[in-house]
Every structure is written in structure tokens, then in C-alpha cells.
Amino acid sequence: MSRAHRGAEPRDAMSRVVVVGGGPAGMAAARAAAKAGVDVVLIDAGAKLGGQYHRQDSRAGTERFGLPPGVEHLAESVVWALEPVPGGHRVHLRTGPADAPGRTGRSIDTPALVLATGAYDQVLPFPGWELPGVYTAGAAQALAKGQGVRVGERVLLAGTGPFLLPVARSLLAVGAEVAAVLEAGNPARWLARPAGLLAGAGKLGELAGHTAALARHRVPYRTRSAVVAAHGTDRVEAVTTTRLRPDWTEVPGSRRRLDVDAVCIGYGFTPQLELAVAAGCALDGGFVTVDSAQQTSVPGVLAAGELTGIGGAELAAAEGEVAGASAARRLGARPAPPVRALRAVRRGRRFAAALAAAHPVRAGWHGRLREDTLICRCEEVRYGELRDAVREREAYGGRALKLVTRAGLGLCQGRICGRVVAELTGELTGEPGQSAAFARRPIAAPIRLGELAESPSAHREPGAGPPRVAE
Amino acid sequence: MKVRIEGREHEAVPGQTVAGVLLGAGMVSWRTTRGGGRPRGVFCGIGVCFDCLVVVNGIPDVRACQRLVRDGDDIRMQHGAELPS
Ligand SMILES: Cc1cc2nc3c(=O)[nH]c(=O)nc-3n(C[C@H](O)[C@H](O)[C@H](O)COP(=O)(O)OP(=O)(O)OC[C@H]3O[C@@H](n4cnc5c(N)ncnc54)[C@H](O)[C@@H]3O)c2cc1C
Ligand code: FES
Image (tube, rainbow over the protein chains, first blue to last red):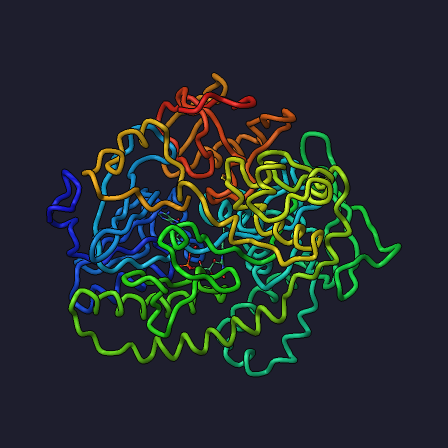
């Protein structure tokens, strides 16, 4: 192993499957690969397993999930870069308290890398969305499940998609009053797609449970409604809501003011793409392209879960199982074809397609942006600046716009505003948005300057080429 | 377990995040932005937005929603831009 960098232990040299992400997809991948008889390293940022759907209360001294022997679970570990090496990929990670200096660095070479990094909430900007007290729906969920914290006493939920329902239920469970759930779409459309509906029978049962809980607590659920502004000086004190037409423009005269101390927004999810992009995986419609064995366009890199499309935890786990079996095969194992999981994936994808069709984001929301509405939270770039940059400086294309306006150049590196900037730019220029330009990030996970200086790739052997982080 | 928030002692339990402790103490913001000096706290809750930055034991730019507290942690507000470290 002359190409392996100095200090790599033999067990870190091409002998194991590496799974990134400990959610439903990653856990299933690790289990399937281990069942096929190969050794696995499972790397996850969290202190406990579960990812988003199965988030555990991190204050409880228990661990709900077990992994079979043969799986080494590296908790509190983030993968910050990938680089191609002969026969596979080198995975660079850091283990230790989040964002602390001096975390332990390690690099593992693998011929079979499974990416299962999940997704995060998509939020559409509106006046006041930068006020403290405005959260993503996922934040409310993560704080309720993981910390037993309620984000407010009286909370409004708004956005689109079935995810608003479990969040409302979690808020009720931690003692918050849910003022209303505003769904911008019209879920009656579900009924128009009976095939997808049947495919998601399990999921529908779960949703029925949430709906019943909402009804018990008399939480109003309003379709074709949205938040158009949040009010307050240093925190949210009230919101303005409105009724929407099918294209999401406002119904005139339908504005209402509501006193709340928190508002939670979720318009679906955006996949956590940086590692897949760093590996050079082909994307389609903003998601990682995979074949029926969950293989990406890059040999030795597999993807599973919300990275490949938004379809919920059951589909994520089924994809993970398939990916784990494929990964084991790359290490020479001969597992039986995961027939049941393959069937579950096909069923899940039909459900996901029905879900996407039932909850489209309509462009009518653009009309609620004001000159001074923040688009990029990090760099505090306002809608007016973005529009002027596009119109007057001919700053076409995501990359050029980023430099002119700084939108997407802040600390989050465009994770939050990237899709929105691409959509708005597309509208202003009449060309389709280039959201892929926003998925390229120099570093997949934050590391400190000191850590970067001492990382193995900084003193690799000559000729090994630059580390392949997304430029 | 005890931590200090702006010098004042607060109870905490293992497994709490810095954000969990701060929100539990009734705070909604603990950072000001570099440009407008505007208050920010938690937004995404899962480590992607970097709104929740805070100074822990003298080190700035720590995501409060990701960092688990340790006994004796010194937690301070983060004002504007801090020098990278
Ligand atoms: C905040 C939030 C809460 C949610 N809660 C629910 C819910 O209650 N009910 C529901 O039906 N759906 C929920 N969802 C939807 C959820 O996305 C899926 O249903 C499901 O969790 C997806 O599974 P997954 O395995 O693809 O990814 P996830 O469960 O998201 O798991 C991905 C894991 O990868 C880790 N990771 C990512 N990047 C790295 C890296 N570079 N290094 C190391 N680790 C990394 C993450 O920390 C995470 O643990 C939630 C989504 C979000 C964003
Ligand atoms: S709240 Fe988004 S990173 Fe902590």
C-alpha cells in the first residue's frame, strides 16, 4: 500500500465498506454489508445513531439502535473531504466535539463508499424570516425530539408537504400550542394519484395518526395558506398569513395577523449533496443519479436515502439495504439479491413521485418578496440587490452572481439560499436556474484552519494529486 | 453539571446541546450578524445554516445546535465577525 498516506493503519486500507450517515439509509446499508460478511465503518456526525427520522433524545443515557459485530460506528465524526485513490476513495474525517479545535483526524481508504447523508429543510424567504423565532420545521422537530425543547409557547407551522404533520405533533408533545398548520398546496390532489397512494399505504397510516392528534388538540389545518411576513424587532411577535390561489399568488383581502412567538417553515427538503458532488457523482434534477443497485455514476460510490430523492424513512432504509449489499459485492462477498428491499424501493419511489406531484412549489411566492427581504441570510443580501445584480451587471449564471452579490458565499456556503437564488435568477434572466453551482462547496463539513493545516492531504506524497473536495 | 452563560452559572445535563441549554434558559438569540449587527439564534437546528454560532471556551464559530455541553463550559455571545481559528 505504497499510495496510502503515512500513518494509515492496515485496517484503514481498502479492506472495509465505508458508510457516511447514520440515518435509516446508512444504518440499513451497514447492516446489509455486515450481514454479507464484510467489515464496515459507519461514520456519523451525531452522538447517537438514527439520523433525522429516528432522532434520539441525546440526554437519555440509552442507545436505541444496535449494529451487528463487524460494524465500527464512529460517532461525533464528520467527513470533510473525499479524494480518489487507485481502486477507490480516501475518506477524510474528524472525530470530536462539534467545531472544536484539535479533533482527531483519520483517513480511511475504501473500494466501496456508501453516501447516506440525508437532507435538510427547504425554506422560501419572506419578509422577516431572519428574525429569531423563525425556524425550519426540522429545527422544531430536532429540538423537540432530541432535546425536549419547544421552540415557542404558541407556534405557527407553514409550508408544504406531509412533514408538517409530525412536527405539529412533536410540538404538542413538548407542550407547545400549535396556532395552526398552513399548507400552501392542496393535498386533495393525493386522490388524483391512486397508484402512488396505495404504494404509500404504511406512510398514510402514520399520517392518519398525526391528523388524529391534531384534531384532538383542535389544531386548525388550513390548505392553500401561507405566512407572508413575520413581525417583531429582535424576535418574532406576530405573523401575517394569507390565502393562496393554486399558483401561490395571494387571494386579495385574505391577510390576517396572528400573535405567535415562533414560526416553523418547511417547503420540502434539499439533499445534502456536498460529498456526492465532491466524488463527481452525476446529478439529475438536484438529486444523485443511481441505478437499481444504488450505484452512482462513479465506480465504487453508492448512494442511498434522501440523497437520491425525497421519499421518507422507509424508502431510505430500503435503498440503504440495497446499497449495502452492492457495496459488499465490491469487496468480493456474494450476498443473495435483496429482493424484498428492491421491491420496497420500487414501491417507495412511486410514493415519492406521488408526493412530489402533490406538493409542488409554485412560483407565486416570488410576489411576496420585497426590495429589502433577505435572500442570503449569511451575507445579508437583499432581494433588491440580487435583482439589480442580475439586471444591471449582467451577472448571469450562479457562479458569477455569487461573486457579484455574495449570495451563497457566506458561512453556510449556499446550503440555505442556493436553490432559491437559482430559482429567482432563472426567473429574472429567463434561463433555467443553475442550482448545481451552489452544491459545490470547498469543504463538505466545517473544519478549523488549524485542523486543515495538519490534515493528511496537506502533506501527502508528491504526485498523489490534490484532494478532491468540491472546488 | 454546570455551565456559564455570559458569566452566570446555569444547570445543564449531559446530552444537552449548547442551543438546548440557551433556549432552555429562555434565550432566542446569541449572535449578531457581521453586516447588519442583527440578532440570530437557531434556524435549521441540524448544523447546516450556521446561524447559531456562539463562543465556547473562548473559541468562536461553534454551532450551538451541534455542540454538546461539557461540565464547566464557558458560553458567550458572538458579536459580528470573529477572527477565524
Ligand atoms: C431536521 C429534520 C427532521 C426530520 N424529522 C422527520 C420526522 O420526524 N419524521 C419524518 O417522517 N421525516 C423526518 N425528516 C425527513 C427525513 O429526511 C427522512 O425521512 C429520513 O430521516 C431520511 O433518512 P436518510 O437516512 O436519508 O438521512 P438522515 O436521516 O438525514 O441521516 C443522514 C445522517 O448523515 C449524517 N451526515 C451528513 N453529512 C455528514 C458528513 N459529512 N459526515 C458525517 N455525517 C454526516 C447526518 O448527521 C445524519 O445523521 C426530517 C428531516 C429533517 C431535515
Ligand atoms: S441552527 Fe443551523 S447550524 Fe445551528
